[in-house]
Length: 242
Image (cartoon, rainbow, N blue to C red; front, side):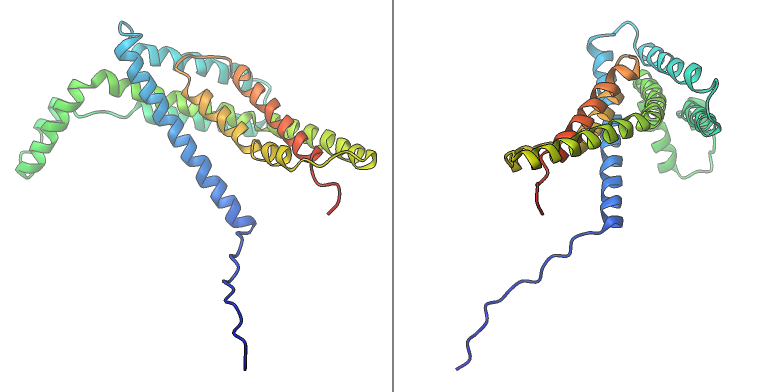
């Protein structure tokens, strides 16, 4: 009599390097989109409750202050790649600034268009006229988003430098713990490993969403240090034997 073998479900194939890279890129883009939406929402709420007198001028002042952090420190005596990226940033900012909303003259033209399309354009005109300050503030916030995104891009070498320092120090501490008979701690290892990526994401979200202009190093540097510490603890608590 043959015995029936228990059913073993097929093992799930783990994604490779390309799959993990694409997943990480999609998650990063998602968080950047969330940061942009959050910054626009904060600006609109501030226009309603906090800076009611300034309205869209508040977002404009924040953009001009952040733009001042980008140009003097990066254009002068910088690499050609940074200068090229800075020019692309100026072009992107100018493209956002050139976005125009429907006006009465634009809506009134084109009498040969279908009546439903004309009605839709009239509705858009009334909507944009009513929320003109909010739309203008969203334009300034979008330009600020582009500038801050470039500043974060230029800060990536700082993250890599602290990651390398943390990795070297962590591996040295692991060897000392290995030869000294130190205890294993999988909980600390998992907690530190799971904190590496959120440290960078948190720096992006918090810096982009701030409704005020601030020196980027005051926000980015603490999170870069936290990421380096997370890498250090992760490699320090790595298994002594495999």
